[in-house]
Amino acid sequence: MGTGIESINAYVGRASVGVRELFEDRDLDMNRFANLMMDQRSVNLPCEDPVTNAVNAAKPIVDAMSPAERDRIELLVVGTESGLDFGKPISTYVHHHLGLSPRCRSFEVKHACYGGTAALMSAAGIVASSPIPGTKALAVATDAASATAKASYWEPSEGAGAVAMLVSDRPEILELDAGASGYHTFEVMDTLRPRHDMDSVNPDLSLLSYMRCLEESFAAYRDRVAGADIVDTFDYLALHTPFAGMVKGAHRMLMRKQKRASARDVEADFASRISPSLAYGVRVGNTYSAALYLALCSLIDNGRFAGPRRVGLFSYGSGCASEFFSGVITQAAQEKLAKRGLGAALDDRRRLTVEEFDAMADLNEDRAFGVRDAVFDPKPYGDVFGSHFEDRGLLVLERIADFHREYRWS
Figure 1 (cartoon, rainbow, N blue to C red):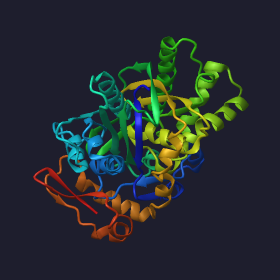
Figure 2: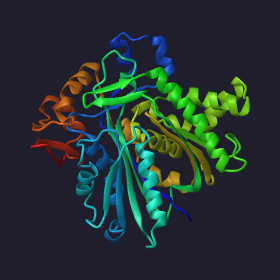
Figure 3: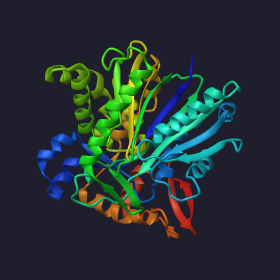
């Protein structure tokens, strides 16, 4: 076998809010609600941040490994656009709370939503080039949304969570097609975080950049992989998913340009090859660097795998960078991922009212980049914490003391 993902898990948050309720409360145009194609969005509590999301995604993977297997993890790389320091990477906190060996590389990578793919490809490259048999790497894509202007159309799409991937020469989930990648990049100001307390979004420009990158990165993939066809080559497609409606529009564009497909054929292809990857995204929202890999989890849990299936994957990060690559999902992947219970975790989230959601958002500033000192007392949201965190063994942020973040297990 080659190199790829041996194990995968997602943390989808412990609370959610209804997207329709947000639209109604903010008096947003309901004609745009259908285009968004979202039902819910996950919400981080004030005691959660990119570190807790990452650790809570990765811990079940690490806990299932023997001590000898854990010691083979020679790299931890975290992809995020939600860094907490200009110098210290959040991978140091993640490494500590996962109890990984000190004989381990650790670093953080950033390129907006492309960061998760940058982490995965860095991990895969280091594992593939290692002369030491059994070398493993842990790639984690994690983010936490910044404050977003209320009553904006961006607010209902933002989510919370992380995806952790164990990378090795035993790709029991996804074996990457070696060398089968197409790239496209250029400078653009579509979405950005110019300050820790705001997201700046140009939705139309971001959509156009995403579409251009999908078309151009697939063209680059086709140049590298002789005879590649957007329909015939791939059993499934999984695309970066800020919201499901964006994926549907991008798929329609690609099918029309590549195959001159009719509206009827586009819809049928979307239902069979794309929609299984969107089942989780419509309930979680945009997880930024983790969005493509949450789509991969959704595909594995909701697709059909009587045998191995090749998937085409598209990663996009604002600013911008993109990559179209492929791999083979193993026949055993679905059974293995089912043990993680992601569907049950989504069902188990606490449903917040819009009023509760707004109260959480007001408290979330205390955990932001640059905060010197803070104590995270869960009393203001004690009912949610008590029912969905207490005694669950989840990592939560307890305090910040002279910029150093201190965490505890719930």
